[in-house]
Amino acid sequence: DTEVTQTPKHLVMGMTNKKSLKCEQHMGHRAMYWYKQKAKKPPELMFVYSYEKLSINESVPSRFSPECPNSSLLNLHLHALQPEDSALYLCASSQAPDSLRQQYFGPGTRLTVT
Amino acid sequence: QKEVEQNSGPLSVPEGAIASLNCTYSDRVSQSFFWYRQYSGKSPELIMSIYSNGDKEDGRFTAQLNKASQYVSLLIRDSQPSDSATYLCAVNPGLGGKLIFGQGTELSVKP
Image 1 (cartoon, rainbow over the protein chains, first blue to last red):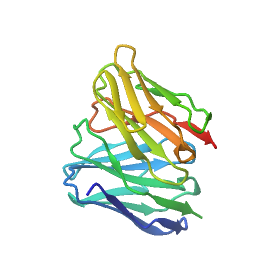
Image 2: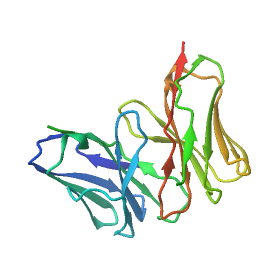
Image 3: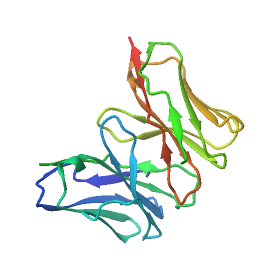
Image 4: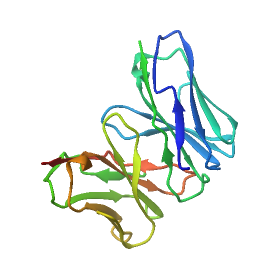
């Protein structure tokens, strides 16, 4: 099983809402990632979790709050977002953060902020 | 600043032709290299990974790596309209899991 799942597939939220994105993998991977992707741009790394601890935060605004409850789950809590935060949010996982192996991407959540 | 560069395209080839996608990277210590395919509105899908100099073949796809020239390429033989997508070159420079992506090359295969 090389699957990373993400829910929801689509999300529309107002600027005052609080919502969460969820990501799950059952490959035993110990590194998990959040990316943001705008149209016609490559994925842009937001956060890296290594063995369930936040290891990299790419200077992401505090309105994005990641959480890793256990080795299989990754959440991204959203609060007071701006319309420019509308994008495809991708979760990925890999064997370990120092592994040279590939990252497996989930299908993404298409977020629209109104 | 570690960089990965790709021709943005679009690259247009006729059906059945060979599509050649190129990528250069700036960090000499990079050890792993990936090609992802991304259809519009979908997530990136791994096509090829390559770790050592030379060629690696998988079906219609061949990845080529030249670490001395800091160059990695992807050849798609017998291109099909279903290969029309954006191809992302990604490099792992060994920075705690960070992947450095190129801007992507848009490929269009015309029937």
